[in-house]
Length: 320
Ligand SMILES: Nc1nc2c(ncn2[C@@H]2O[C@H](COP(=O)(O)OP(=O)(O)OP(=O)(O)O)[C@@H](O)[C@H]2O)c(=O)[nH]1
Image 1 (cartoon, rainbow, N blue to C red):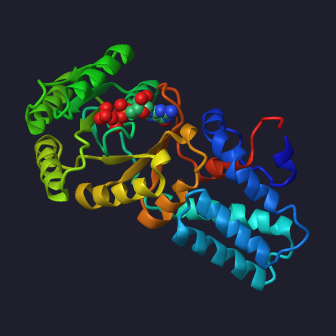
Image 2: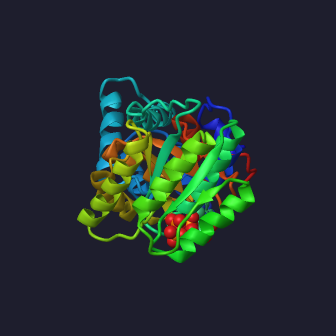
């Protein structure tokens, strides 16, 4: 447990996060921890920290903002040696994630009114898998779930959602490939009412066509939803693939402008050493990360917690 000597861990470990962030922790974040084994805070330490944070995918703007906060604390005399600087870095990283979390809408689940979640994002980011994970999460909380295959553009997407529905024992509303997504959503809303469903998870088409097409399609889906439940969708969840790094952030900007995104699900954290993308998302989009995906199984999923996330980047139970 070499890392525990360097940072004070405050959150209980989350097994999903701990294993999901292993590559990040054992790669760049280990090097970041090691920077603070030096004897003094100097220019070189900040330069090396800057390079590593950028390498970890925090992006230039977010890295500069973090370094500025740290340097300010050094100037004020609050941070006097590398050990204090490590602790300050941890605090600033948590604060950065928490700032976006303050924009979180409270999720209210009421019996008799379906909670409608519109899941958006580029194909291949893990949208369908995330829907399966969310379905399992809501089932575990005792809620009934219905899946809606509104990504009618690809036959495979419909089949994949049906397969998950079967595995999880959850009904799926689907039409033939090429059908009008609005019509599928209409049937989904009606089925939710008739069956007294608590949570409706809607899979949408993720092809990166023009922003105006994307907006038009999502606006239509919204109108159909609101005919049944005026204050829905209650959640517009954007799925971002962590392995695509800064590119994923650019896609996110398009969807944020087109879809009124309320929450982010950050997937495939297990497949990257660049877990720093979460900080760039939080700071540059200001949208809360609600969930993280840490593998292909429905259980490889966790609600996002800023402290647990930062701690999992710095601590692990590996003995190496
Ligand atoms: N390692 C890992 N793989 C994941 C995760 N989430 C999804 N995947 C995999 O990523 C691939 C794409 O996931 P999908 O859920 O099909 O992605 P999608 O966005 O629905 O994409 P389309 O089906 O192309 O619309 C699949 O092989 C998933 O098993 C994750 O958190 N970790």
